[in-house]
Image (tube, rainbow, N blue to C red; front, top):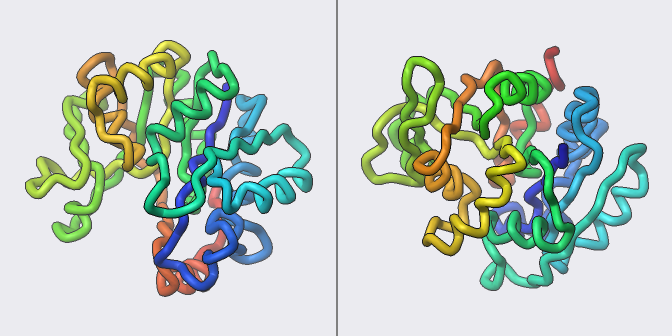
Length: 245
């Protein structure tokens, strides 16, 4: 399995911290955000290569960081240099697929969140389902729902529908940016883009994919800490206590 880290954003809401430095390499406690994520995933033994998709502005920082890790990390530079010219998450996924000729199951994660639970639980869930899978959590806030990918599921966790930032959310189930795609469905990313699925938000591909093939949604067994701006970053630094296995 490959693990693809989406890290090509410019994190403009975290300026000046991220004006010349990538958000996924900001420290929380004694580790970077990416360290928390990848060190945990590596305990699963399921991933043989980690692929970090970066923009050109930050690629060198990721390459320096990658040399400090004991597992294989490939940094892919998507060539963009400004927030206005970014490819968008789904196009970055396809860029990496083509650049590295990926033909494998793939765990796709955003590089700017931390979790208080192990992603090995999600990997095991996906292995049991044998389909592409996402996670979901209950979001009570109507205001936050408007900014999320919202999913509708049946009693067996099958995703019936997903919408990104809908003005009329159908449920309170939000989808965080952590996805598992089977080898067969990785091949469909290009088709999804060509069919007109959104490309900015990573969940836009899931919204298209769940209408083509079975996709299951595991209820998230813990808390996700989203680092969106300076205030939330300071809050996470104070509150985060690591992964509760």
